[in-house]
Image (cartoon, rainbow, N blue to C red):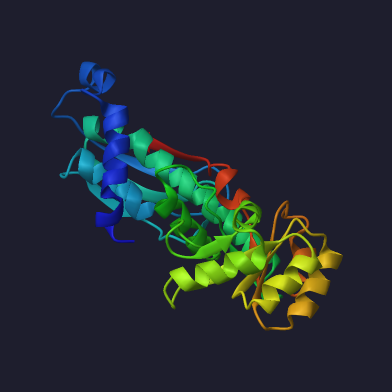
Amino acid sequence: MNPLLYEQIIATAIREDLGFGDITSESLVNPLQQGTAKITAKQEGIVAGIEVAKNVFKLVDPSLNFQASITDGDKVKPGTTLATISGGTRSILSGERVALNFLQRLSGIATGARRAANTVKDFNCRIVDTRKTTPGLRMLEKYAVRVGGGYNHRFGLFDAVLIKDNHIAAAGGITAAVESARQKVGHMVKIEVEVEDLVQAREALAVQADIIMFDNMDTTQMAAGVKLVAGRALTEASGNITLASLAQVAATGVNLISLGWLTHSAPALDLSLKLF
C-alpha cells in the first residue's frame, strides 16, 4: 500500500489516543531515556499491517528506529518477534497502543482470510470480501484480506453496480434495473445482480448481467444455478456462509464466495509490545 493513502487514517488514530500528550509516560519517564521494545505474537496467525505499525511510530517520533523481523503474509507462532523498536522510551510507549490496534486488527482479518482461502484451495473459486468493514478503515481491512489470500469485491458504491433486492423493488424488476444501469454507467463497469431463486437467476441471465449472486440459497439451489448459468456469467455465493460450510458451497461450482465475517467479525490476533 502507498503510505500516502493511509497516513491520514493513522494520524487520526494517534490524535484520538495521544490528545494533548501521554501524561502517564511524561510523568514517569525521563525525556532523554532511550529504550528498545519488541512486538511479539502470543498466538498463531497471519501478519498484516507491519508497515502501518511502522508508520504509526514514525508519525509519533520520526527518530524512532523500527526494524521488522517478518513481512505481511508471514505465518507466526507464539513467541515470534514481529518487530523491534528502539529510541526514546516515551515515544515508544506513546505509539504502542495505536500501532498494536492496527496490527492486531489487520492480522486477525488476514488470519481469517487465509483459513477461508485454504478451505477452498482445491476448488476453482475465490474468496472475496464485502463492504461490511469498520468505518474509515476499509482500505486497510481490504488490504488485509488480500494479504491473507482473499480477493476484494467492489471497494465502494462507486466502482461497480450491485443490484440488490431493494434496488430491484425500486426499479420495478431485474430487467428494468439492469437495462437502466447499463444505459447510465461506463462500459468498463460490471453489473452484478443479487437473486434469491432460480426464477430471478433466469431473468438476470436473460438480460446479460455480468455476475449473478446467489443470496442465501442452499447448496442444492446454488448447484442448480451454476448449471443454469453454464459459464455465461460469473456466479457468486453469499449469505450465512461459515467456515464449516465453505467447502460445500465451493463444491457447487460457484466462481466467487463473499464473506462478510472476514472483516465485520474478525477476532484480533493477540500481540504484545514489551520493553527489554
